[in-house]
Image (cartoon, rainbow, N blue to C red; front, side, top):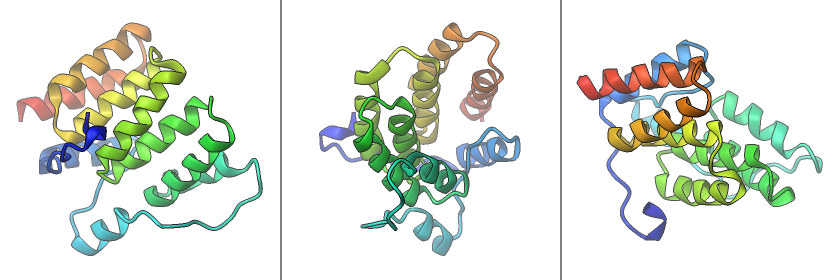
Length: 172
């Protein structure tokens, strides 16, 4: 785990990033990084603060920010939602996924550790962990997580697609 001060791995190779873009285009609710330095820098920015929203709307605001690719904002709003409702798996996983897309795996690992205390043996937890490992280029751990997710929901098209993407990335 990178949460203990270990330097996060380098960014994934271009093929893994292209595969992530395919997932976006397939409508699976994921967004890929962009290779342009300016866009990449803004995409990776984590704001110090975010505009205030009415109490109880943090989760909806986080979802909107995530869906629009504003991962720094979504991370902050998911964090606010998790503080409001510490048992919210959606807020916790959303925060972790936001950090994944920011390539802030140190922060993602902290969020996943928090998620594991809420409910560690769920489909969404294992599928998200698998995708996190895929983004990192750690195909072995991705396979373990995706396989566990598939054992929970064998016919789920998202995890089956993720396993195909993993096979393509690992063979390429």
